Length: 189
Image (cartoon, rainbow, N blue to C red; front, top):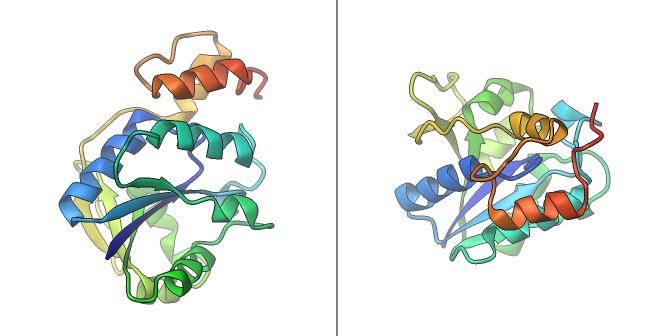
């Protein structure tokens, strides 16, 4: 079995995340792709706009009808900072005969050498860097997987919400409803 692991803040999850995830499933012939929202990313400590529970709920809504897409809550329920190495070790213990592919955005790949136990991560999983046209993979991080250049950013979505502008077509409709119903991102600084 081949499992893809796609971690991040997903603050909020948007169509760009879903499109590149779909491309990774197709290109890498993954049996499933697990979205793993971070409780507290070490490089973004204290800078999440929505709670781990809200980000987890939005992801579940976004992938509810997508075969092969799963939401893995382990980082949201584990206390403290979210470290990829802990997640991969837990997955490998649960599925010892599974091939793991860790999907990393090209921006996050720049920081990869500073990740906790980066060498051990590469032993547990094949690191696949999702690259947009013109982006390069830092040496020694992993292999490149060109993905469509989708110019959607969670930061811009949060800014639009604060400005009371529409986020229609940027996020799945169920996610937009959840954001509105829970008044997320409205009072962000």
